[in-house]
Image (tube, rainbow, N blue to C red):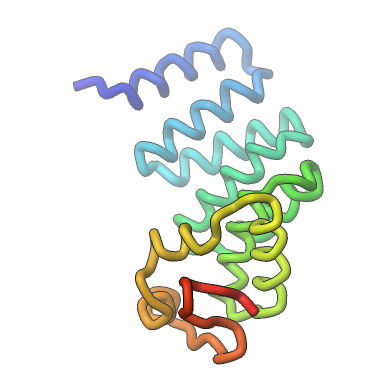
Length: 160
């Protein structure tokens, strides 16, 4: 059965066949592969989109998310950093890079990125609560122990 995601992959493949220099077509197909759970194919298409357009901040950002799916946090941080360099107001890239810094126990870097994301309008408390209901759950999920001075639970997660 041909799902909407499969149809999107087919449509993007046709667009690529017609115009192999279309960074947008590779990017869109990468999104469809990512939605389908085919992370390696998504990374390959995002990489091609980036080769075709080195200034494609969204392709770096989405490839960063795909790298998270593979557990390659260094590559994800690098891609989020590139997206931020290209688009300094990319709030979601700050948020996701900050989240990875938490995972890597880089507390000050996490605080800096999450503060910027919050100042740009990202509801970091809402995102944390969507992923974890408590600090303990967060610590178990990420296999980290957060320092007492970095988090409190009055109204959710608050980076001090």
